[in-house]
Length: 302
Image (cartoon, rainbow, N blue to C red):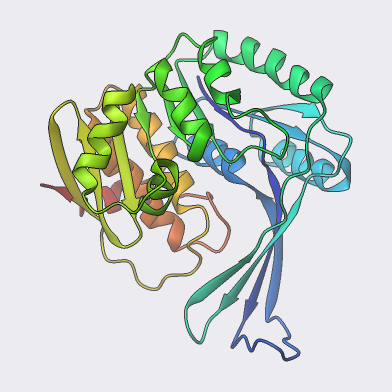
């Protein structure tokens, strides 16, 4: 089993416009609601790729009930812990004229000490049965920066860590199997612009990461393990429907590939194929595994 765990789920509204005009009245051509947020996107992508997957997340209020209902309806495995505050609502605005996506993001509400303790207890139980763990997403205000580190100290299986900032730096001492920030997040984590990407990736390995995967939008993904480096070019995808969740799908494919015994680079190729498939879909992390396999054939590492 692969467990996707994090503290920042979302009930997502996706609005599609022929043309989005700031400052004007904009009428959407279509509107969709769905479960989202990094931890839930990873869990859904894992399941779509055929993994025995469990999403672990706090939920609260009407929006949390909507997420739980969707997971039951789709037959996805999940473990929910209680939050007194409704799960945040985020909105994606898709402009068909420009092909751009605008995100309106509500920050997750702080969890109480008791709510965090309930999540940690559920995590301990899930991690004991897991073959791989994916820890992902930012931490709600008031959560200690050592939260992911403390979870990893209780984790015996390999972990993929898709986080940033102080929480990433704190967790490196636990030697996560892979860390996966994007280039902007890497700069924020290190507190300075990344002029030499290889040197910055080496720095994370020196601090404890076993491998580093850095995404850069449409540019090649950079991979480091030990003293080896690769660049993996993404396929050309057209049309781009909705880019939200691509990094989460990459993390899911990476975890699935590693669990299946693929090499790191092969697992990255699978993750990038999942991201390519995701960008062609309106709702995040709803992947077609056959199309993911076809995308993977187009991805080459150097």
